[in-house]
Structure formats: C-alpha cells, structure tokens
Length: 353
Image (cartoon, rainbow, N blue to C red):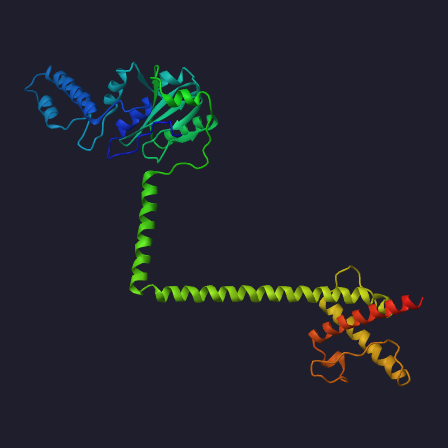
C-alpha cells in the first residue's frame, strides 16, 4: 500500500486530489486548475457576448459568480475534463444510455471518477486490483473484483455521478509493482473525520484525567484504585478456595461411595445412573448409620459388626442421632471416615488370606 499515491483532503481541493490520485502523482496544483477555470470562464463570456454586450443576459452573466470554481477550492466537471485532455484522457458518463449500450463490465475498465455534492474522488485499478482512492479516507481502500459492481451501484443509489476514464493513463510505480504481487488489507481505512474525532475524544479524556489527578494530588485516586484492586484479588482468591473445597468434597464423596460399595450395596437400594443427587446421598448415609446403630444395639458389649466408630456430630456429642442433629458437613466427614475404614478392612482381609 505504501507505493500507492494517495493525497488526503485539504480544504475543498477534492478535485485536485481526485486528479492526482488518478494519475498517481502531483500533476496538478490549485493554481493550474484555477488557470483552466479562468480560461473556461472567458470562453463562456465570449459566447454570451455574441448576443450583444448590452443584452440583459450578458449583464446577468457578468454579475454571477464563476460556475467553474469558487473561493473554497471547488472545481467543476468541465475543469476536470479539460485537465485530463492534456493527457489524452476522456470522461464518459457511466450511466448514460450511450455507454450502457456498450455493455462493458466495469471490471474491464481502468478507472472511474465519482462526484456527489461537489466532492470528487477516484476509483482506479492498480496492477490487478481495484482501490478506492477517496481523499476523505486515511488511506487507499482495497475493493475486490466481485464487490466493484456492487460498490458502483451503491454510489449511484446514493446520488453519485460516475464517469468512466477512457484512454491510457501514465505509467506509475504502484501499477508496475502490483502487476507482480497482490496485496491484502486486514483493516479498512477510516474516514479522516472519524479518525480526527476519535483522536480528539482521546485527548479530551486524557485532559480530564490529568485534571482529576491534579485536583486530588493523584494520591486519593491511586489509593482508591489500590483498594478496589485488593478487594477484587481477595474475592478472586475466596472464589478459588471455595471451588477447591467443593472439588475436594466431591472427590471424598466419590471415594466414599466406591470404597464402601461392597459393604452397603446389599443393604441400600441402588438408583439408576452414576450421578447421585445430594438428597439421594443424604438418604443413603442416614440409612447406613441407622443400620449401624441397630447392629450395635443387638451385638454384645465389646463386639461390633463393623470395626469403625460412629463419627461425632458438630456439637461433639457422640451419642446424638446422625439423622436428626448431624449437619451436611459432618455427614460428608463421616462418609470419608467410612471410606478409609472400609479400605483398611479390605487390606486386613486380603492379608489374612
């Protein structure tokens, strides 16, 4: 893209930018275009004078401003057309019946000049690719072959006049380079107004921030930001700890159910599926502890059917009923203890064998 000549908008000199972007070089200046405009004005004055210098039409013509240029830098299509004649180039209206009868695919042309409300810009093919060289853009805009016809149709719908440039354009470095390579454009160029507005907004935000820092001597805001950061870090650590604790509890429950499956599979009904809800797990634990309590009451003193102690409740009373007073955390702890005791018994049984 760097090899493409692209004049950006200055004042109202879009006609100059349009011509130079088309020819890919600084071929025309405002002075040269003004000279062409004055020449056209003189030719029009001479034609009006043929009807008589004392006629009302002639006096009205002299009082009117030039139709070929104004003080802002605008130039008419006649000025642009005469400027291109120097290079042997001709302009044909794209949507005229004469041109439409030729049924030429736009992709087979070399360049277009577009105009809407006194703004001129060029669309040109460089190498094998099309580019929108609008001076209001921050840079050349790549236009794909498939999008070109749609782009021109959209301009026509918006009220643009489109002219086809006929003739051989002067050689340029960009055209020679892009004959050998194809370029890709990751980001579309913005309008200069949009970029300027964005830069202005950033400067305003920076100025406001500097005023606040200066008014507070910087310390109050920095302290507040530091406190917010510390609170965010503390909450983050707390959430991580809670997630780790919940993961540990889930693993303990899984180990408990796997380790005690041999001893309780015949006593507790199995539910379908491999995932148990918290309610199902609570009912299984209560049923198991009730069965343990009944067996201890039936066995003689000093003999237990299962070599494990009944875990204490959260209140510390070893004789309290686990189904009524045991909390969810205590029951999870009991399940872990049961798992460990069951594994130890299995190891002892296998050792005796």
